Every structure is written in C-alpha cells, then in structure tokens.
Length: 345
Image 1 (spheres, rainbow, N blue to C red):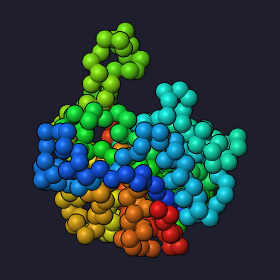
Image 2: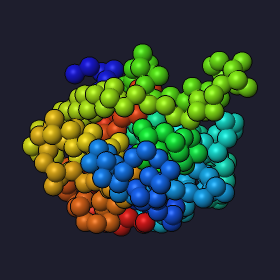
Image 3: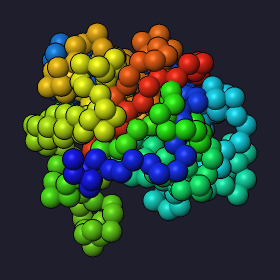
C-alpha cells in the first residue's frame, strides 16, 4: 500500500468519535420552485442527480452561524462543555480573512483554543478529521471538535443549470476524544490525496489572488462555482472507490465485511456508482441527498448524524467513510460505530 495515499497508522492516542450533531436552515427549496427560473424540470433533477429539495440559508445567515449550531449539538451529544481544538472544514468562509473557526470557537465560549479552517472542498470534513486525529495522536489535544459547514448558496449562480439544482446549505459536527486504537469509535488510517492538475474542474475563477487584475472586468458569473460535471463524475467515482478500498485494507476488512458506506452526497448517481464499484448494496449505503442536496464539506457529518438518528448506524457496525471534492481532493477512513451516541439534529 502506498503510504502517501493511505497514510500511516496513528502512533499515539487514537481519535474516538463520542458525539455528532447537525443543523439545517429551515427553508426548503423544492425542484419546482428552483425550476421556475431555470431551464430544467423536477423530473430531470430527480433522475439525473437524485434531489427533490435542498435547504437554503437566509441572506443574513452565514457559514459561521450554521457551524455554531451544529457544533453546540455535537457537544451536547458528546456530553462535553469544552474542547481543546476546533477544526472547521468549509469552502464558504464568512470572510476571506480571517478564518471562520476562531469566531465560531469564541461564540461557543471556547477561550484561547486552537481553531482554524481547512479547505478541501467536499472532502474537507474527512481532511479535517485526519488533522484532528493527528492533533490527538501527537498529544496536542485530547478533545477536538470537527465541523463541516457551508452556505453554498452564496457561491452558486442561480442561472447555472449545472450547479444551481445541486447544492444546499447546512452544517454537521463531530466530537473526537483521545482513546485507544482499535476501540469502538476510533478512526482508522486515512487514505487521502489530491490532484492539482485538475484544479479547474471545480473552480471559482475570479475573486482570489490569481488574476486579481481582472477583478473589475471579470464576468459576474466568474465569481461563482464552475464545474465540469462529466469529468468530476469520472474522477469522483474512481478516486473514492480506490480510497475506500485502501481504508478498508488498512483496517483489515474485506469489502464484504463493511456494514455501512458513508459516501459524500455529491449526487445520487455518483454515490450509487461508488457503492456499485465496491460491491456494497444500497441497503448498506445510507443517503440523504434527496432532501438536503450536495452540502459540500457538511455532507459527511450531516449524513453521519442523520443515519445515527434514523438507526441506520448501530453499535458494532463497520463503517467506511469517503469523500471527494475540489482540488481535486479525496479522503477515506474507517471506524466501528460506538455505542451510546445519540445524534443531536
């Protein structure tokens, strides 16, 4: 196994999941509502990407607002009132500068704590979990709050048929605490990587440091996400399938032994294709994309929280977690679902 793609086994304390939480803005946007100003139909969206509705935050609600509520719920789920560090995965920070995590930590009453953002697109939450596990393994923290939060509606062109039906807003969070490798809830090795040669497959062309002389002349659409859907589909399926295999191998599992596959809800066909490539049947692959859309870095923790709440994750289940996003970036890990977790939704 290639160490650069599959990672190393943790040498110190293991990161153990002790709580999960989620938060969705209340406003539901159905396909019919969306299509009133878009060249698409409810039937096309359901068939092609598997979404019936998505959540949208009001204009005054930010990524940080969503993150705070999901984080509070995860801390209640874990029964903790304090953590040593907060890692926030997001593509839609409240500001270019500063990072959003310190403000979230402040609002949670976490004083003088480690807090920083991780940007890895839709793979961000699994990347952030790997970083959190590293903090715990190194002894830099004993309890880490990992949050994935997005207001994707802020960076989506409502007239773009390729992206407007796809993305939703929301946040999910997970508490990791120092424990023993191999105990239920401990995160396994991470299979992760990136391919910057395809950085423009999912990109916001304008508004950053690159080509900033065009800031005043760039077309308005260049300040929103552009995506080459067919290319993203192909790479997402290939990279997530391989990362999931690597993570299962590192855990000593065969794919037949995987009880649940938690796959980033990119779209319904991508998730189904990954499960099919791995030979994992639909009944072992929870999904919530029909009602929340693609929530980018919030996708994995939202799905974990929803699956736990609905009883689809049971103590002792062998769980593979895998995600893929802009960068291009991908990441996967494993855990045995622990007892005693009640998701806070």
